[in-house]
Length: 179
Image 1 (cartoon, rainbow, N blue to C red):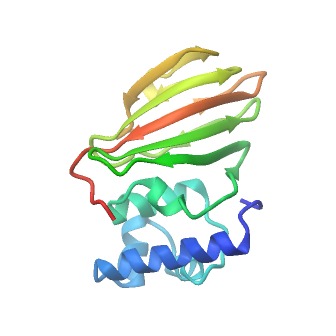
Image 2 (cartoon, rainbow, N blue to C red; image 1 turned 45 degrees about the vertical axis):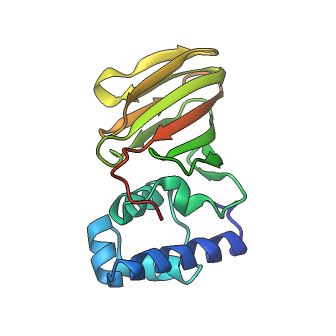
Image 3 (spheres, rainbow, N blue to C red; image 1 turned 180 degrees about the vertical axis):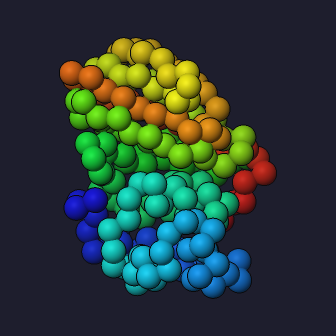
């Protein structure tokens, strides 16, 4: 996540701390629930550290907020291991809908952890080819193809010889907390 600048990290950290404190949770409670080291969470809240996409997802699930709520202040694409993600827009209606741009380098497999219960994900391939969807039922997709699936289970994105660019929407159930 080398592109994430100091200002974005600071904003993410303040936002995380505010959400955690609003729930009356200690650093230890959130870190344990999200499966990350307390020292890493402390560094993130102080605007330091180098969070992975999975770490941010785990924190969002535990805080019961959409992923986009945590990354909204970040102006640069979030990236790791050949995958870049950028929040395009975040709806304020019920259910909550986040829209993302995503780009995957050739020959990568990104395993995504299960999102909050009831979450749905839709992908439309803008260019290139990839396999995507639930780990046990991933489908081959090309430019113009759209796939929707339940994202409250482990899922993946796998490219072969080409880059793949896609638009992704994530629809959270209306039981999600609205920050």
